[in-house]
Every structure is written in structure tokens, then in C-alpha cells.
Image 1 (cartoon, chains in turn purple, orange):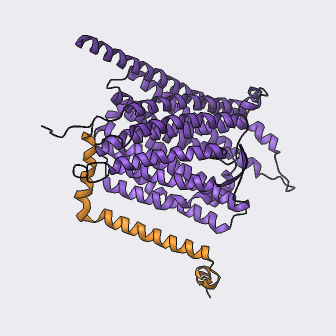
Image 2 (cartoon, rainbow over the protein chains, first blue to last red):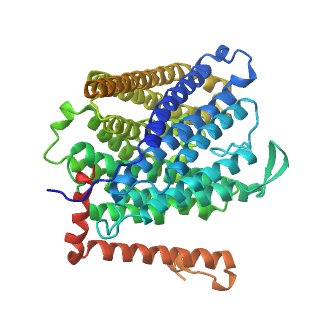
Image 3 (cartoon, one colour):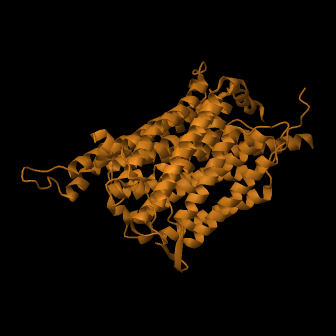
Length: 476
Length: 60
């Protein structure tokens, strides 16, 4: 008999963040689908400045990356750090403050962007008061996470499980990257100018920009993978040693990649080459990690037939492997000359964002809903339906962007026999229309899946609450 | 000087402080990766490390 009492974990804040993440997934994918439709049918801008494409696209990226992604990272970090260390959160009240301030801050970010207040820096559009608020909330989150690990019983839990390492790596890297890229001189309450100028500003921006992908959208979600894939599969991760190598290779390597966003610019040529070389080198640990997750199912692949949550987690790894191969190829100068500034880049980002980040998050969120409310899902069939909507939607999206991106690149570089451009820019825009419509359809499918998920989760929680109430009544 | 020698030659006197910082960090990262591989993959460490992966299966 197990004589060590399991602690009562702090689940309230995790429940709040779990539901919040799903709500923001629905809102963010709706904004994205609407923005994609505006590109296909410009009349949908309605001449309303607050929802015109230029602003709506940024509202979409902030909602899906920081609101949905951030809340998922907070929910899973607070959930897993307690269980892997056998201890409650160091401060439950600090976690609640973190969650609530994060929600308010992100809503303020989205509203201010719709009002046209922006730094103009990709993935760092928040003006300085909100950027400071976000940094403070992130510090509270990191501090609470670190202190929870530090407060574990070192005799029963002498080592720290690898998912916590990935979370910690993300927290530390994002803190210094976000702060350095945000260094600015305020000139009014909602206007500031970067402390860096010219090519240095571009270099710092993409040092942050690519590492927002590398640490926030990769390391953090790998932490999710290393905990939730084994838990959902009920099998240990294929190789713990490979996970350790994966972690350190990511930490050492990722920070060098940013310059591949600036090939053929005023940046020194060697910086772009360095970015491309390290990008290609990163295929090795990335594929090692993806295989580590997939091979966890060795001998139990049949479970994919019946476990729809596991399907989300495993297909996310397939997309992770695919996008971490595609990215380095696009970083190489030869391919970059064709792909840069085209829709191919947009397709690549979404194969990572929809296929990897969203899918692994969705799998983890479904898993947590069942554990936190101690219940089965309202409908497993709806999870299967969601899986196919999300998968087909993602494939539609990225195929449309591959075709339109490569076509754009080829049209822009085509010359006639007199050495002049064969196509005007407007002709290349007109040629994109069918693919933009196809992309909007892909987005609509993915958004519909998110809406199905929200309905399923709300019904599950209602069912669990009704069951709990009837049990209390029966005992009374 | 052959093409290869020319390609690999370095004008050390022209190195700036930033160049040296970048070079030192690159070498340290390379050594860090070597140490990681040695610490993780040596056979004596296998059992201890791989046992870690079973712990989360019974954490809730």
C-alpha cells in the first residue's frame, strides 16, 4: 500500500486557464479566418479602421500566440509542475493574480491594436505600458514555477522531470528576449521609439521574432509533449536520454537562427549564413525530439484507432517534424531567394502554428479537462470530428499557401526577352485569388473544430458539475 | 596560398571585441554540447537517466 499521501493540487487556477485558452482559441481562429477572407474578398474590410486587415491580422496573431498559446502554457505548466514534483503550487494566490492580470493585459493588447496603437514590431506590437505589464506578469509566472520546483521534497523527488526543464528554458529565454527587444524611449503614453536603429533594430527584432517561435512556440510546447504524450499513451517516453540531448541542443542552438529572416538585406552576409547553417543543424535535435514522441507509441500504435486525444498529440509531432524540416530549407539562401516575402512563409508558419502548436495544445487541453473535472468527455465522437476538421483545415491552408507562395516567387522573378518584368505586382495579386479563397476555407474548417471543442468542453463541465451536485445530494 | 587556405585564413589583428565575444561564445557552446553528449550517452548513466521516465506515469 502506498503510504505517501498525494497532495491536494491547486486545480482552480488551472481550470480557469484551461477554459480561457479554449475561448481564446475560438476567438483567435475566428479573427484569422475573417482576416483571410478579407484578403480573398476585400469588401469585408467594410472601411472600418478598427477591423481592417492591417489591424485584424495583428489582433489575430496576438490572440492565438499570446492569449491562446500563453494561457495553454500557463495552464499546462501549473498542472504539470505540481504533479511531476509532488507538491502544490508555491503560491496559489500568485498564480491567480498571474492568470487574471494576463487575461486583462491581453484583452488590452488586442483593443489597443484595433485602435491603431502599435510599435510596428512583429510579435511585439504592444506599446510600452502594456509591454511592461506583460513582462511583470511573465516574471510572476516564472517565479512561481521556479519556487514550486524548489519547494518539492528532495527525498521523494530528487530529480526534476524533463518537461520542467523545457518550461524553464522557455521562461528564462523569453524574459530576456522580450525585454531586450522591447527597450524603447517613450514619448507619450501610447507612443515609443525603439532604442535600436537601422540594421541593429532589424537584427534585434528577428533575434526576438524567431526565438518567440523557438522558445515560446517550440520549447514550451515540447514541455507539453514530454508530459502529455506519455500520460495519454500510458507509456513512458521512448528515450529519456534523447529528451535531455533534445533540450540542450535546443537551448544552445535556437538563439542563433534569427538572422535567416534577413537574408539579402543590409545585414552582414555572414550573419545570414550563420543563421542558415544553424537552422539546418537544428533539424537533427528537432527530428530526434519528434521521433522520441512518436516512438513512445512503439508496440501500441493500435491505440490511435480509438484514442482521439492521442491522435491530436501524435499528428502534432508529424507536423512538428515537417515544419522543422521546411523551416531550415527556407532559411538557406538559395530557397530563401524564392520564398521570402511570399505566402510560402505564411504557409510554413501555419504548418507549425496549426499543425504543431494548436494540435499538441488541443490534445493536452482535452486530457486536462477530463482529469481536472474527474470525468469522461461529453462526446468522444465530437473529439474525432474536431480532429478531422482541424487536420483537413490545416492541410487545406498549407497546401494553398505552398502553391500561391511558389507561384508568387516565380511571377516576381520572371523576365521577358527584353529583360523587363513579365508580370506586374497587381497581376501576381490577382493570380492569388483562388488560393486565398482556399486558405479561408481551411481557416473556417479549423475555426469550426475549435467551436466544436468549446461546445464539447462546456457540456463536459456542466455534466461533471451536475454529477458532483447529485452525489452531494445523495450523501446529504 | 591555395583557395582553401585563403578561405580559412583569418586576419586576427582585425578582430573587434564583438568578434572575439562571438568566437568565444561559439566555442563554449560547442564544448557545452560535447559535455552534454558525454554526460548523457555514457553507458554508466543509462539506467539512472532512463528510470526518470517511469515516474510521471504514477504521479496522479
